[in-house]
Each structure stands twice: as C-alpha cells, then as structure tokens.
Image 1 (cartoon, one colour):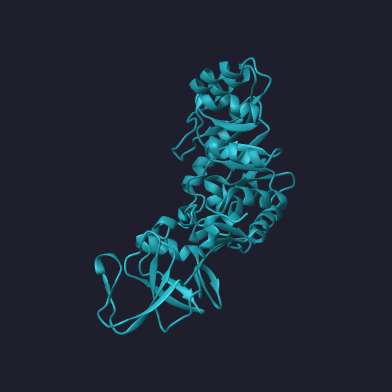
Image 2: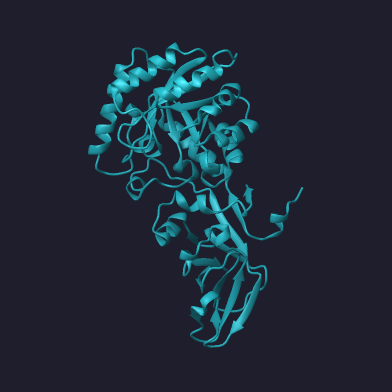
Amino acid sequence: MMTQQHFRPTKAIIDLQAIQQNVQNLKKLLRPNVQIIAVVKANAYGHGDVAVAKAALEAGATILAVATPDEALHIRAHFEEPDILVLGASPVSFVPFAAQKRIILTVFASEWVQQAAPLIAHEADLLRLHIKVDSGMGRIGVRSEQELLELSNIIQTANNMKLDGIFTHFATADEEDTSYFDRQAHFFEQCLSALPEKPRLVHASNTATSLVKGAHFQYDAVRYGISMYGLSPSSYVEGILPFQLQPAFTLESELVHVKQLQAGDSIGYGATYAAPSDLWIGTIPIGYADGVIRKLGGQEVIIDGQRMPIVGRICMDQCMVALPKAYAIGEKVTLIGRQGKDVISIDEWAVKLETINYEVPCIITARVPRVYV
C-alpha cells in the first residue's frame, strides 16, 4: 500500500546487494567460527534497520547490535531467532522485557545488577549480559580489574542472570599511530586474564580493527558498523583497505519547477543570493527537514550528468539550484550517489559539513523514504 511520502520524488535508495557484498568480503578476512555482529543502531546508520539486518544476516552475520532498548525491541519484532545486543546503557526497568525477548544487555556497574536481579529472580527467562570494559574510550565500562571481578561475581551469583560476554571499544583504531590503541588492547587482555572463566563471546574489534589490525583482535566476534554500509572509518583506513567497499546509499530527487531569472533577481530567505546574470533556476523538493541542512548551501548536485550548485538559503522543504539551461519538470537530481560518469560521495558531504561520514546518512530524516534495491 502506497503511503503519502512516496508521492514525493525525494527518496533514499539503499543497495542491499552492496551491503551483502561488504559483509561477505569481511567474512573472508576472519578466522573460522569468528562471528560477525552487524551493527544496525540508529536505523542502520540511516539506511533502514530491518532491511539492512535481513541483508546482513543473509550474507553471513549472526548477531545484531543496537544502541538502545527501543531499537532492540523494534528489531526483535521482525527477527525471532538471532541474538540482539544492546551496546549502550539500559534502564533497570527494561530487564524483564530483555529477558523475555532474549535481548542481551551491556552491563558495567555492580549497583545496576543488584537493582535488576530482584526483577527477574523468580521468572523463567534468563537474562544474558555482556560486561563492557572501558579500556580508554571513556564512555561506559569498568575501569579496573577489581571492578570487573566484583561485577562478574555479582552476576554469577544472581538468579536468572548469565555472563555471556565481555567487550571493549577502541578509540583510535582508525589512526596510523598505534600507541593509544596498544594501551587499550593491553588493558583489555589484562581484564580477560583476570576472569576466572572466559564467557561465550569476547569481542573487541570495531570496523577499523576488523579491517586493518589482523586476526589477533578478532576473538569470538567482530562488530561491523560503518564499512558494512560501504564507507571507510577514516582516510587512513581507506588507504589500506583489504577490499573495495561498496557504498549503499544514494539520495535522489527531481526538479519540480524551472524558471528564468534576470540579472539581480534574488533567491531564498534573506535574499542572500542574487543572480549575477540572466540564468535558469530549478527547485528541488528537499530541505533541512529532510537532513539537507543549511550548511550545505553551495554544495553541488548532479543533473544531466553535470554538477550544479545549490544557491540561496536551503529551506525546510525545498532548495534551489543554478541551471545552465532550462530542464523539464521531473528531471532527475542526484544529491548523493552516481549519475553518468560523476559521483557525489557521502565523504564529499562530510567535508562540506566539517564532520565525519558516519553523520551524513544518519541526519537524512525519516521523512525521506528508503527504497531498497
């Protein structure tokens, strides 16, 4: 059934085959029996969590990771079998739901376990937990062997709780200088050695670690995030990738209006742009409410295989482009992706926005429908 948003020509096209190829190529780098945790948090980095999760599982991933309890419940409603891991903090009130829905939670504080244990002590469902080690990222996690052992002991003695895994996250895996990474890795190894018994899943490799740090850090599973979507974690990693990544995200629209301006005519809020000469202007139905934020003013789009700049201030729902000639209504506009021989990458947008490529697909809002190919 067609929803109202599909009447608008603006859409994000997600190439699921590209995602599957990125997963399959990573799998070739891994030792036998090392699992792939597909990170589908934040609506799969803006690509659409359900469709991406399905594609990743079909390509060989076995575990899905999210950031919040609500994301986990949304994924579980669509996938009955695979393990789902919440990477972030969960409120104690979520514990009975997590146990019932077989959702694995991240834990890093003994007080949390003490508060959570009574909520499921007499239930039939088992709550699986992964301890997060803060080896230097500074977000959440235990910060000493003493904290780790205390937390581990409390979990082991609680009814209906099981220590299922332990993990950490590297802060500088995508950088050439390995000194900080090495310190984090050493501390994590110390924590593993301190545990009297290794849990089922040890995982430390994020995308960059999985791609460029070798088999030693694969442990039992690796977490595959940004490069599952065809994007490199950093320019340094991009230069030493073991395989070519396949970008999955394209952003397209159409011209909905074309008009000719006279020299001196203005465009947009604040009349900040005045035509330097007689020229054609095209209107595109996409704006900052869709994630094309005002800082993208001046960014080029591709029409008829040629680059053309956004002019004037970007509006909430529309923006305007300077055209070299009159084009027909309905002419295709590529904002991100390939058209003809040219391509506008997510990385190009990231440079324009002075941010990282991770942020770009995440800010394309839900008002833009995701269309899967």
